[in-house]
Image 1 (cartoon, rainbow, N blue to C red):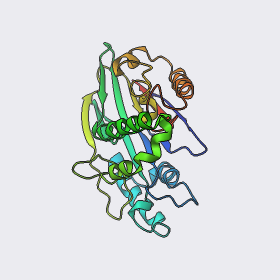
Image 2 (image 1 turned 60 degrees about the vertical axis):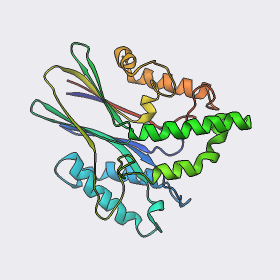
Image 3 (image 1 turned 90 degrees about the horizontal axis):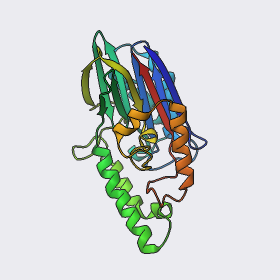
Length: 266
């Protein structure tokens, strides 16, 4: 396998990380707590901790993430007053064993598999996307009512975003990595055969924006039919994001997000 990985921060802190090993790869997208401490970036701390200490444990990716999230809980417990002070994270991972590729999805990270015959398969969990679309629709409507830019309407939907965040790992919500003394991980699981695989991509929502919010590509399939160079794709996302800094043409929660992608060629 040949692996190419790239991450691009959107601001001073990068809340994305990738982790690659001999037979696995992971992408993690951290989310800031509902209540920030203002003395550190908890999401950055969490994803950095997961990457730096990933080899502390043996076993599956899921087991390692579980144990490390419990460790993160202990690291943050001294400064976090309640669960609202803890960060969370979306994630996706792949593990290769013999002729089987196992895929895990949490939140809005995704995996795409491209076969040698050109077939493109998208593996994702749309639960968080459903919540985000409702919140974004409300944000756009408020911007129209108040005659302001879409990005200026973000503070008016803060209660909606908080309500949605509280649904992490709840029955009517979405799956995520959460620091806890007893972590439970409820990933969406897939398995595919590797015999005809050409490439597999793992990426955060900063990358999938190209075919969702930013409409650089009309569909997911179009993007991965045409993707030739990851660096060029990231440049396109950055260019379109900054050309619509107020989020009016392409409504979204922020001007630009951290972007992370891992491509594995078989």
